Image (cartoon, rainbow, N blue to C red; front, top):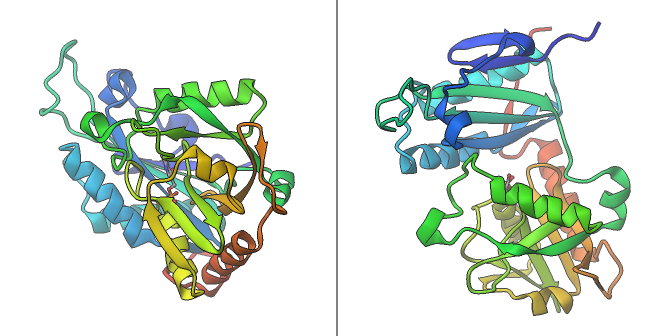
Length: 297
Ligand SMILES: Cc1ncc(COP(=O)(O)O)c(C=O)c1O
């Protein structure tokens, strides 16, 4: 019999079948919750501090005062990995607005619910698509505008992400990208985007989640001597790019071979995508920016 995954819920480590939250939790009723996802590879968590800092900013911005300090979150994440004995894992940590018995509740009064869920490491695409690149659709839905909900909030409320995904999958695409309110390329539901043209690397400057992998690839590109520009990108730039790739905690770089029916003209994955992704995995193998997990046996 396979062992049940262990989940952290409000101070307790429980088998998945017993790790419940109330149906009156505002996270469930209203999508009132924030989260982050960090990954472990070969027993080492990558950029844990950076993920905790981004999560902490999401908590502050949403007025969620959890009972856990940043260090407590870090310790509980590590302990969740140890209890599951996962070496390669994706770890999602979530804080919701908590339970209220009122039908119309004052969001200021609840005690947040705290959850940590570790699962075996996931890649955004299967092995075949990681080799040959994915087909991206430009969604008809736009990303949130910063005057509605700044995309830097890593919030659980992802209905429009789901709708965009259904649209893309129904149309036979692997994933999607959306534009912002001004028609500039923004990001996908779980990844940031990069364009390479004439050896210069471009990525949107605004209206996107500050992806930890995005920042890592900017750093790696600069280390390799490439010029990186954070600027507005339009679909024109995607259609005329030498290379397009996405970045995420779920796999590093993922080459794109087609955008809304337009094939990337150069061979995919492109040489810069390949080089930077190789550097990314070398960085992880070497343990740079990593927190090593001490397993119990
Ligand atoms: C909307 C969005 N953009 C970008 C990313 C990529 O961020 P990271 O590199 O930190 O995984 C994510 C990750 O889930 C995301 O949800």
